[in-house]
Image (tube, rainbow, N blue to C red; front, side, top):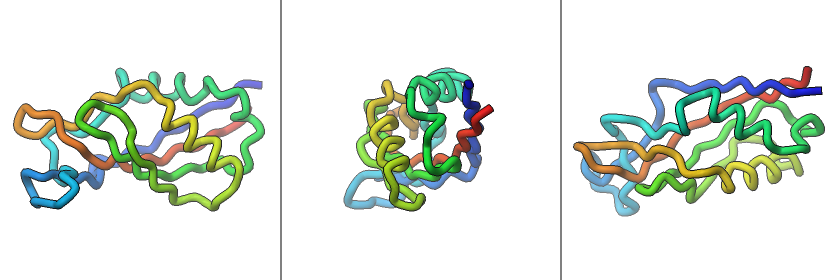
Amino acid sequence: MRSHIYLFCTILCITFCLDSCKTNDGICTNPDQYASFGNGIADFSAYMLKTNEIDTFEISTFRYDLTIDKKGKIIEIKSHNEKCITDSLMIDHLLNMPKWNPAIKGNKKVKSIYPLKFIVHPQ
């Protein structure tokens, strides 16, 4: 049985930036271009389906805030899910993702927060 991934992104992504708000951690609040993974939803879904345990996950709707650095690496994940084995497995899977395309502000790559919500729906 093959699972499906449904990704919900909002254009009003919450991100933070040293240039715009002078925060201590240098996270960009209003990038000109938000961080993205590969060529979009299809690439994200393909990566997420690479985990063999996905059909056995305890929860199916996942919500996270990903902190993505200037190099496109996920450096921190804040979970908005119930703490369970499934959440830990998903966080580990996300932390091992290939690099993202980082957010851009003024033609410079910036550290940002990317709110992510997706549903794993077994067939």
